[in-house]
Length: 115
Image 1: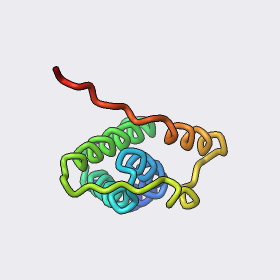
Image 2 (image 1 turned 45 degrees about the vertical axis):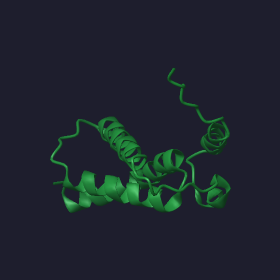
Image 3 (image 1 turned 60 degrees about the horizontal axis):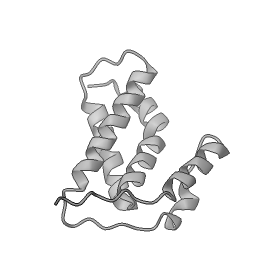
Image 4 (image 1 turned 90 degrees about the vertical axis):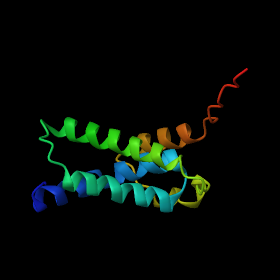
């Protein structure tokens, strides 16, 4: 388990990134909030020794994506339009925000039909 001070520092630093990844996948604020909480709990309880900041960031991204994929298995999933929460998202630079919105406007990938 991480020391409390180290966990608080990491949680404050990466919480927004985790939420943005989760919201991108699930398109639903309550589920994105739940995923963010789940990922932060996994970070708090991890016994993993991180080599550097990049290692922490990549680990958090992978854990977040895996938690998001788990939510797709639920038959109770709902989605909400991004515009509902767009004004509440924050980005480190205007370019990151612009890239996020351009990415969100891309058409969804359709599954191939099995013949």
